[in-house]
Image 1 (cartoon, rainbow, N blue to C red):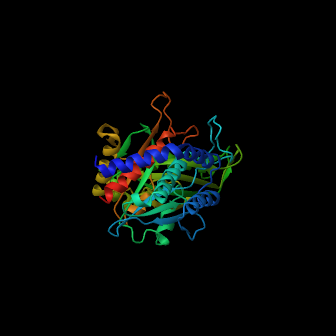
Image 2 (image 1 turned 90 degrees about the horizontal axis):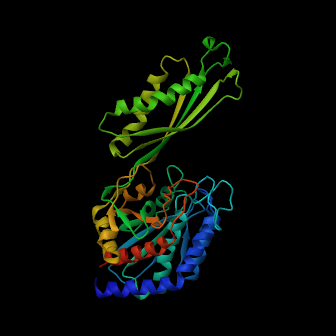
Image 3 (image 1 turned 30 degrees about the vertical axis):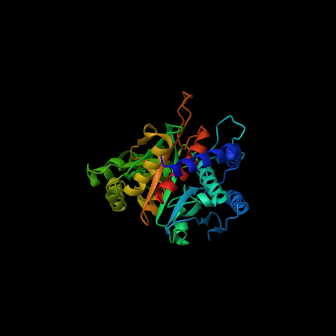
Length: 397
């Protein structure tokens, strides 16, 4: 470790000793007051207030939530972006903790509260230690990551990455112990799309299904057959997961309905398959429904492509993490089936999406993302700030 690195690391550690408890308290405040995608008004104000108090000028996004700010340091004119997401999920918080969600049906079950506080803490550290900032930084706090196709497009529409040469984001990883950093060169997430299928028929009496189009049976056929048909059309070289999460039809047990609506997510780790999926789903659906007599409409929403991590930026993250925490604390992670709108950023500029270990190694319970019991070992906040500050130093070295 260089002496400059030792100086920065020691300075960050001292700052965290003073402010670490406050950052945890802020994370708990955000966790107890979650806001769904596109409605992150209070969260945006909270972040802006902290940045304003630190002397940084914030810029709100034109959609009304989310913001960004610049922090300039010594350097050669290059600028890197650090991204965090603000939104929570539309699901119940099932934990028995003092900071459990106060908003019924909304919870931070994906760790965005941790992402926000980690990026904010990094900004606040450098705002108070400008002499240690080795280059120009931009902190992006984006809305609506959980909404397809994602709030990253709102950031790009406002040119909020203009002038940035690279971007890095952290994502909580409950499969990794706190203090462990997960990296991957190349694809790290999967493409994630949404489909909605509307079926229509004349309806009828359940005593005489042979005289009409049994729309419930037709819908069940779509659920059972469409995934394998799409996979066959794409070929065995491409993996996909087409999974239905919603089927709505009928209100009475003795009435065959006239309408049915099915919704599913479609995921693939392959960029090539992602580009072919809309046509493949439409063709496969036509084949499944060809002899049913049902009318149908397909609404295919292209969500996000896979996140493609830049090799050079990822190497910088890995070197910084190994220098800060030790070689044994940096692991290569598998490509995830989950999707993330960070993908839109890595299509514009080089970037790296990094996994931040949040599992308490003393706990035998393994939590998961997008689950009502999700929580983190809050020591991960300080780990994330140490990682980001070390990466920033490594990038501008």
